[in-house]
Structure formats: C-alpha cells, structure tokens
Length: 326
Ligand SMILES: NC(=O)c1ccc[n+]([C@@H]2O[C@H](COP(=O)([O-])OP(=O)(O)OC[C@H]3O[C@@H](n4cnc5c(N)ncnc54)[C@H](O)[C@@H]3O)[C@@H](O)[C@H]2O)c1
Image 1 (tube, rainbow, N blue to C red):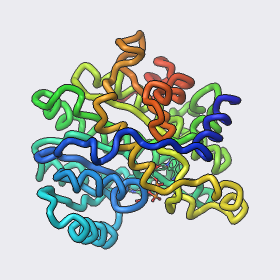
Image 2 (cartoon, protein in one colour; image 1 turned 45 degrees about the vertical axis):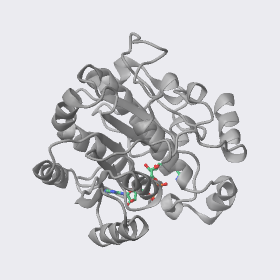
Image 3 (spheres, protein in one colour; image 1 turned 90 degrees about the vertical axis):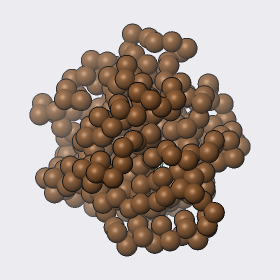
Image 4 (tube, helix red, strand yellow; image 1 turned 90 degrees about the horizontal axis):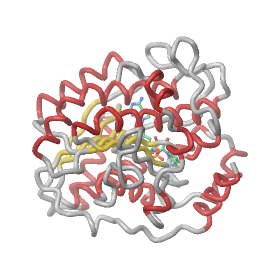
C-alpha cells in the first residue's frame, strides 16, 4: 500500500514529460483502430493523435450525435489527414447489442490493428444495472469489453499474421482504483463467477478495474502465441468527465491532483503503439506468459512504470478461473 500512495503522490505532483507522443508515432496509413468511448475524454484525445497520423479510427460508443460531433471536430482540426474516422455504435452495458457492434465493424473492415478498451463508468448511482441486470460498473468496465474483444479476436489474429511484429494489440483501461480497492487478493468474484454487487460503489469501481488487469493479463497469456500484445494501464489522474457522478466532497478532495486529459491519451498511445512495449515480461516469457501491464506515471520511464498493478495482482490461476471462457 505504501508504494501505491507514493505512486499516487508522484502522479499528482511530479508529472513528467511524456516520452512517446504523436510526434514519435509513425504514419498510420492503412492501420485500423477502435477506441471505445473514443468521442470523449482520454479516448477523444487519443483519436486526435491517431487521426493526425492518417489512421482509420473507429469511435465506439452509445451516442451517434456525440460521435458525429467528434468526427466533425476531427475533420476540422485535421483537414489534411488522409485517415478515416467512423462512429461505431456500442453499448457495453447491454451484452445483447455488442454482437451487432462487432458484426457491423467486421462487415466494413478486413483488419484491426489496435483495440483500446477505454470506455468506462465510475461510481454511478448505487444499484445502477446493465440491461442484463449486472452491476453497471462491472458490466460496462469488465463484461462488455470482454465480450466485445472476444468477438473481435479472429480479426485481430488474422491481422497479426501479416502485420509488423508487436503492432497488433488490445489495451485495457484499468485504474489506480484497482490497486486501492483490491490491494492483496485481486478480485472478489462470487461463487457465480461475477463480482458481488453488494460492495460499495467505490469498491466495485476498484474491483472492476482490478478485473481489467486480470483480463489484460489473461488475454496476453492466451493470445500472445497469436502475436497479439495485451496490456492494461492506469492512464493517470485526469480532468475528464469521469468524475461526473462524484460528490462535491470527492471532487474537492481529489480535484486538485488531476492533470489535463491529454496526458491520459499519451498513456494509451504508449500502451498501444510504443515500440518499447514488446509484450515480453522481464525480458522474456515467464511462467505466466508474455504479460506486460503498465502503470504509467506519465511515461517517466517505461521500465520503471511497467507493471506494478499487474505484478501485484497477477495470478494465473485467478485469471484462468475468473475468465474460463476467454
Ligand atoms: N480520468 C481519470 O482520472 C481516470 C483514472 C483512471 C482510469 N480512468 C479510466 O479511463 C477510461 C476513460 O475515462 P475518461 O477519463 O476519458 O472518462 P470519460 O467519462 O470521458 O470517458 C468514458 C467513456 O466511456 C463511455 N461509456 C460509458 N459507458 C458506456 C457504455 N455503456 N457503452 C459504451 N461506452 C460507454 C462514455 O460515454 C465515455 O465516452 C475509463 O475506463 C476510466 O475508468 C480514468
């Protein structure tokens, strides 16, 4: 826990200069990327970076109007981009619609280079549920991304067969909340394999984000052999709308330590595109497979910022039993 607080302190007051920005990102012509929640917050800043480098970017989310507003902004800000930006309807809180989202993407594209599972919700009103009746945070942050990614696995695998080594990736947005509320035992799955929705809202958020680490690690373990890199990351503590459900007290307590949202996009850019991310842990394949988890402190030092959350929670048997169908 002490380490966690010192990292939180570092992130709040000693934000270093990012080392991998859009200037370092090679031209992305011909590459296809999906960012869930790509039309707001961190995801939208990342979309700008990718679109400015001629990428095809799908902004996946629930609101067509917010999607088209974001597309207009991108086209206005980057009129010279040779890329393409599209809205993809995706409601992670309704499992029954996710297949349609994946199908619609697969009907249009023949490759998928990077999937950024960025969308998430934090401390909505207690007892908010998904369409299927799961706790909203768990459904949106864990079950939805898990299903969406699984449906896209075949196209990721196909892309990895011909793409440059290490360039096909799935990245999962975790949070320092994953460490705060799951410091030792990882994730508290009930006997039904689901997160226990009787927990406090804050704990459920943290547990859902710890589950994102397990998902990232398990996906790396299972899909590394197919040439797919999977990692999870804490984007940083940022001034986005994620705090929309926070109380005035929570905002006052934490507001001062938040940084511009673009820094979170640098974290995602690093996780999804930096050549420093090789998918190999400790320089080679360990017993747990080619796992790389990121806990980026503004990318101060990739080596130093690597891992932490995943190291703390990674346990092959935990993730394997938690996600047997992966
Ligand atoms: N901002 C921070 O300080 C911070 C810290 C740690 C982790 N994160 C994580 O980073 C990610 C991005 O957050 P952000 O800060 O940009 O906040 P944000 O609220 O701007 O972005 C979240 C996005 O997720 C989308 N979303 C929510 N429910 C959805 C659903 N059911 N289906 C599809 N999309 C849905 C929202 O519409 C929005 O576009 C989240 O996963 C968040 O938990 C953020």
